[in-house]
Length: 598
Image (tube, rainbow, N blue to C red; front, side, top):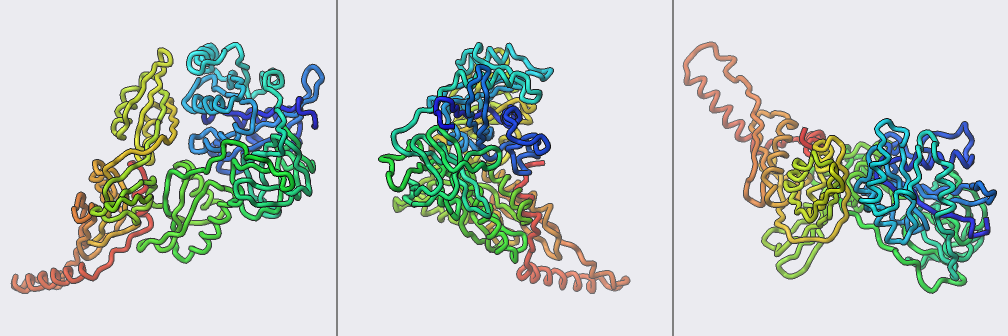
């Protein structure tokens, strides 16, 4: 379609599990762009892990035709976005490529924390927001209460809300009419510019770059320039997404589509970058480009050290489709060669782990996740440290700063006490508490990012019976008292088990690790000491008792001195054995340390 006034660009945003992908299914079904026999639920979630967990990991764009009731033909470009806080960078890119946003709210759950943060993200980009109350077919749906929350929590007019059931298709026609009536048509820029909001790797064609065109036209054969890295390419294919790639040969102002330009690796493409024509380049890039920054770091090692080359190939292939995965080579005395990786959050780490095991058949071990600390040395130099192995000697450390987050928690008032206790235990400082209505409370806490890495989310869900919702953003860093906890087995340090932790929690963390290792290490002929230490100070200890070989079995009576002589000889042998004996750590020991408390 060439008439820009008949195009509508919007994204679907919501809290996790409020029905974004199911609503996208209904739009695709109405447009009849997929054969009935090929249609399946959550058609845009093309990874097995997305389907099993019921989450969207990667944004998906689709172009559909729509004939309005007044007979006008429209072209709707929409992006189905992830709901989890780890992938909020993907959401911000999708929002930057749209003029409108469908804000989905579950009729049974109401407004949750990610609903709020996504709405503020949309308002920052001056998007027109259309509230949509979904799941109205559920027996537990409370539409009047959700409309009150719309007005009170979000400041939106409840009269504008469209009531739908994405599962049954009820209200979808009214929603499509509201989209063409309320969302503005895109405006055309004077210069040829397009925003890269995503990309994926095709093994036969190279990188497929997802674009929103703001001005000019991009067609097959044109020379294009990526303004961030200054690289020039020639467009081989251009087209739009109709679930599959549909080669139209041209993209004009207002279009959402793709180009293929013989780009070999995803790392050459920066999401948020501006594409312009090589011959007539734009004077300035589109605003809003920022590098994606990993916040959680962990090392990956193959269970069998002979599989290192295979793991290297697998990570390279995985990073082709996941530009936010940052990795570099790493090595450990205990686990051999591996990779130090940066992730957007714990869910991202889990997804990478599962994809390595499933898609590439890799058996891997992940070390305990850590955050990046800024360590100022006594000489005045500041170095970033995310790996315990790189932490300098305590005598050289002047001060340490750790990243802090602003956490927003919306919970039913009945669970308030236990959630406040949990946040306080995690060194949180309450900055705000607001009753949204007589049943729900919004809590705002400033807390260290390192404290929410391990079991915070699981405990929050169990304390609130699944009703509390959690959202966070990294706000900056603060001074902290950091300690490196080493784990010693038989007096030898195991580098892969070392952790950086707040000094006040060090003893408890060390005791937990020692207790778990005690259950995993096989008994030997000598006593094995498992110790947690900060520097030379031992702060926790467990002992694996020795197996006793009965050296007196051959003595049938006789003098006591003969028995004592045998026992003394055994004692000397065990002392010598302890000095030269090596304790083998099973792979299960590393996994046991990472598991949350049973």
